[in-house]
Image 1 (cartoon, each protein chain N blue to C red):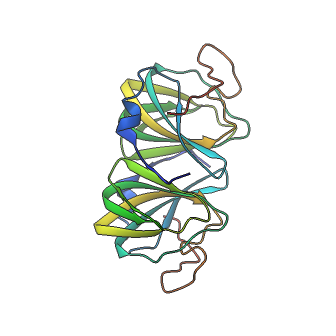
Image 2: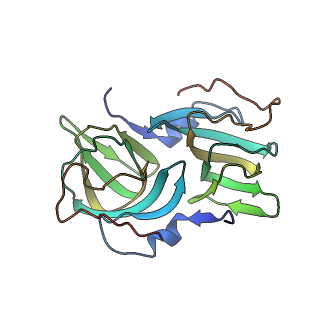
Amino acid sequence: MPVKKVNLNDKFNQFRDYWNPKIVGELNDQLVKVAKFKDEFVMHRHENEDEMFLVIEGTLLMELDNETLEIHPGEFVIIPRKTNHKPKAIGEVKVLLFEPATTLNTGNTENEFTVKNLKNI
Amino acid sequence: MPVKKVNLNDKFNQFRDYWNPKIVGELNDQLVKVAKFKDEFVMHRHENEDEMFLVIEGTLLMELDNETLEIHPGEFVIIPRKTNHKPKAIGEVKVLLFEPATTLNTGNTENEFTVKNLKNI
């Protein structure tokens, strides 16, 4: 496989749907994903996976059990496994996600947001 | 441990040395690091670890055996294990690194650039 660079804006321009992460890289059994968020997701937790959200554009609110973090471009948050969290977007938010290949987007819940087969873009 | 957000600029403002990655996050046995690069590093490879370089500021040249990639802010490259690579900076470059906790910065070589005990900042 040739080594290729990835341009995040190119990747974000390839899709318009929300809460549907796309795979843009893989390393050490971890996936690098991009996603667009709008409005709010569902509260959920991942039993075995820590999850990192790096904000590229927009403002992400991350609701936890006892507080809400406000995450701006150039900022990230790592949500440890077994931690309830609910992402909410102010407007449209573009994020870069790092998480194990086994991570289901809705964690311990399954609902209309659940995406089981992520696309590579 | 409370969940905290991390601001990349705050982290970059905490150090001035080059080629000395600092740990800013950990998840799933992977480390998130920030580093400043200037001039050029040494050609090396990691036998067991893939390594991701996301450019935050400046232009990074990544020399491979047969080509050189030019990586700008908002772009990343994943260097697969066993792949020779030599990062070179045009001016000062700020990067976010994502790699396993076991990764030594100089890979299969040890020299004046080698840093064995990374600081958490």
